[in-house]
Image (cartoon, rainbow, N blue to C red):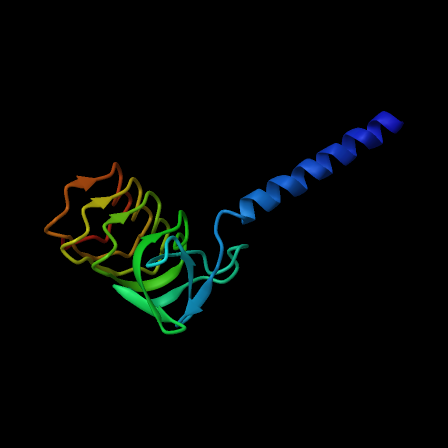
Length: 162
């Protein structure tokens, strides 16, 4: 019986450690206009999840700004954390000039997303980046785009304008 309890205890400890690692893939250093940011350098930040459990989602018209200011210091918004905006409730998306790469799965399953507008500085769109955006109708691609990931717009049947 002691061995059984020891195995159960080890499983519980393992699950607890795994869940802490899963929730620790980003840090929220500050929030500006309802968007969470993590500092990646002294001058740059990335957008991270709305909350670590995925209960709160970003929504509405969503702008990834060129830069943000926090406590008198200006930071360039240069990236998005993995899955930060996946399954969010955004309806339109404007991507700022400092975001060069849209990562894999970044906007996957955004079922209310209708329009996307990129600046000409975006050079790459990752795999499945906009997959399952079932009402996505219009995308303004970057003139600087050199890489389009596999299935970037897969299952986007409403897409009529690129």
